[in-house]
Image (tube, rainbow, N blue to C red; front, side):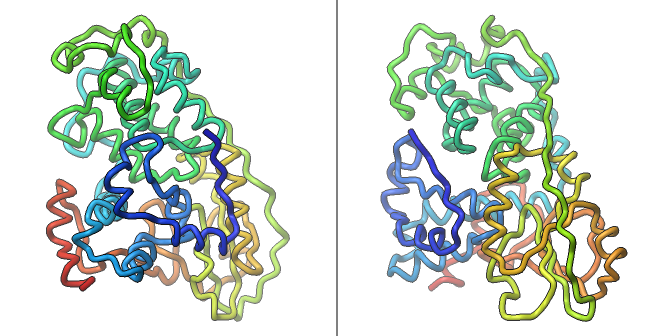
Length: 365
């Protein structure tokens, strides 16, 4: 399976026309199902969940016809709303138990677990920066519930490699799988994996009933663990040419929207803070993808350093940026993101309580 995520904005917009929301609902759980592959562009803020939804509705679909597709978009907004309120580096509801280590299984890192569907998904992640959502759940269950690793290091490992890495979606999902953000852990046995990943494996440590799976000892294949070490390779700063009499629009890893204030004169700066990438490291592939996407924004310049050093060194006074939970120390005019619904915010303990509150039928008639 070969995946190539183009970075030209026109090509990205054309991908919106390829969405088949009805087929998506029926097949999205299968590896070869009708997924959109838009998540890297949504996560990097090139397009928004609202933009995707409005484009699909413009094709004549009704909400009731594409509810499954709409819910997946709303899941993304929901996780972001949780991140606005909760510290996602800690347990959202209760601590994960049991935990036997705070590392990650060596065989997961090396795609050698012996579970063919999971190993091939990990290899694809390394090659392309993408992993199917069901495979993410399988891998998380293997790491946390079978190998009994605390969720945080495995979650950072996956985030590091994902082109669509979104810390809110990633951390909330890992905590959901391991029971730190849910009332019950998520398990997948070999039969389930075979069905959705199109493998035909048997006699593995997952080839058992769910009742047994929830009580098994850590398999020997997962026992060896190690710390996940990262390297961060940020680019060099440009020699900035700024006019501090004009507004300055700050872009970052989560905001690469080419349409944002695109009709205004101003300084456009891609801010890459070493402290941010130290706390939430990503691979060189992810950095290169971000930089390629940023070229859709005319006259953008790259600054590597802190927000305060940027604004102080260049005496920037009229600064604009989009809200995000991981923006630390930003000062200026904070603008709201392009939510599917701006009417519902705050923390909801479950997605469905959030979903019911949205009442999208009222907004999107």
